[in-house]
Every structure is written in structure tokens, then in C-alpha cells.
Image (tube, rainbow, N blue to C red):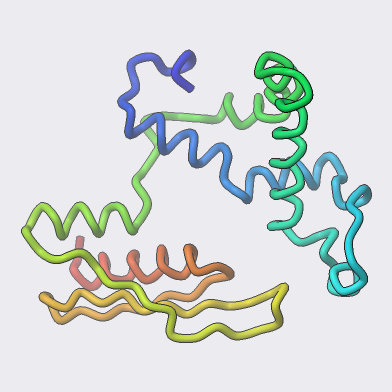
Length: 170
């Protein structure tokens, strides 16, 4: 990222990097490489379709990257891994990178001297391999409560923060 965008700020580079190496991206690459066909899973995971589960695929791809590094060096990792990221690197645009909703909400509140939001999981439903999280975002000082839902706690918190921003008309 730094070599591609030498004048980008640290914050922009961090967001570009986070976008590039997030679980969804790693799972997409692992799916493209058909990692699921080579995973050794327990019977429960096999029955529940674990070889297609995005979290397992992204973890497996990360593990392979780590194994290549431990078995060789960073240059070998670059040679092996960068070709899979090249199309995504080519699409990176520092001007199009937005801060996520939780960050924007936190910055909004801090800039006005308000307390940080409090997030709490209000419910978790579904089977272990396909759970849905419901999260509440509470802005006590402003008497604002928003709720979000997602396939992970993080996604539900992002959705709750986005709704809080909408309620605040930010």
C-alpha cells in the first residue's frame, strides 16, 4: 500500500489495508483456490458444510500464508501471495475509502465532548455455524439507542453504529 500510495496518510493506508485483508477478501481468495476441497474437518463440520464456511476458509488461507512465511521468508510470501491480491490492489482507491460507522460515530462523539458509545449483545440466535447477533448501541448522554443485526458481533455493531449516525443525522 505504501509503495502504491506514498502520499496517502497513515489512516487511509490502514483502512485500505484492513479492507484488503479482511475475512471476506481472504474467504473469496480461498474459495477461488478451492481450499474447501483440501480441508480436513471433523464430522460435525463436514455435516454442517464447514468446507464452505467463510470464516474457516479465511482462517485456512491465513494459516497457509503463515506457514509459507515460517517455512521460508517474507519475500517468498510476497511472490506466492501477491498475485492473488493484485486485482484487489488494482481496485484500491484512497479517495474512495471511508471510515467505518463505528469509527465515524466515535469521532463524532469525541469531537463534541460526549462519552463513547456502549455496545452490548442483546441476543444470539441460530445454529453455531450460522449465528445472527443483535447488538444495541447506547449513547446515554444523548438518549439515543440503536440496534443492529449481523452474522458476527462486529457486523452487528457496525450496523448499530450506522443507525445511530442516522438518528443523529450525521
